[in-house]
Length: 329
View (cartoon, rainbow, N blue to C red):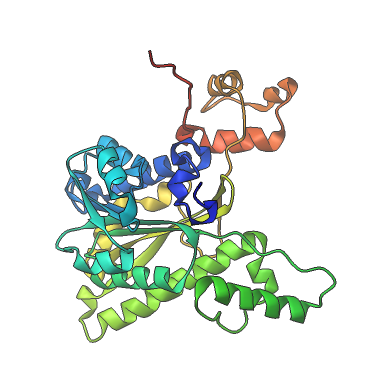
């Protein structure tokens, strides 16, 4: 009897290596992480994430940044043999159990890059993970959070008040917590859902930092600077929020990182950076590449590409992954 697909882990339903927008996101994160060097060489950081069976981000973190202290958290203990088999390097340590159980068991004695890359919606348990990491990371550490931010559809022939009530109730069913007052149906639809999720995540970080800092001196208080606000779609709409923690005394070090020079960095909650690579042939990509970075690409309109496709490719071409079919004999 075949497994019910509803209970299959996501890695048995999708090959995450073949998601172009996700692939671009990984490369953009790597570019941002390189700037952490002003705190200390990035190779000395610890990387904590969810490797699944492909370990795509772990492979990239090791190859691009030479990080050798890596921890993969896997909640599906029934697939432990498969995770262990696919572990790409011996420097990856496997920790089995729910993230909320494993994170408190880890050592937080060094700077860390933590990517909580969930494939589900923002839930109370996700917020608790975010709160815990916020309460323990050291200055110069980075937290990245990815969640499903697909907006809800509006029922037909209903008033705004009825739709708001229905969607707020649905959000609570999905997340396990009540939304703050003032969030209506327009905040839970389309791209606005991503903004709502980011607001809730940053609110949780802010509350935790206030508790953490308490009566500490100003120089030792931990601060959080938002850096990333990615939205992309390789199926469902996904949100990736990221930022860096730093002590007030390290503000000059943070300034040296010059994250603001990254074209995709943003510190404003209402700004979304959409990763939407156009679907193009290899020949079309090469045609545009030959005219980048300084040339004009508008002549590509003559081969049938649309203006928005050209603009999105020009904006993202440096991070565009390449896929090829290879027949192994």
